[in-house]
Length: 104
Image (cartoon, rainbow, N blue to C red):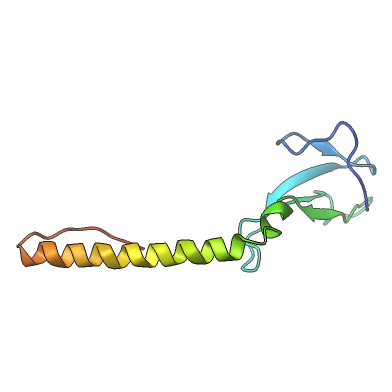
């Protein structure tokens, strides 16, 4: 696997690796890895000299052991808030007030 040169960074600037090819920062659009950032060499699909190296750049997020539980708690909170909003809309409607509020 290639390693970054001392001149490289992942702050939006071009990064060069040992193979001396620039790295492109990309965002995954797949169902399994939505919006996950990764690095890839832009010439991987072109003929000639290639470097097939790529890596995720946000591994720290996916390795967070509490992340799954935190997401579960947030989803439960959202469900509770949606229920509360609906109850308030129903109560307002019983007083003759119609509230237009779309909740996804």
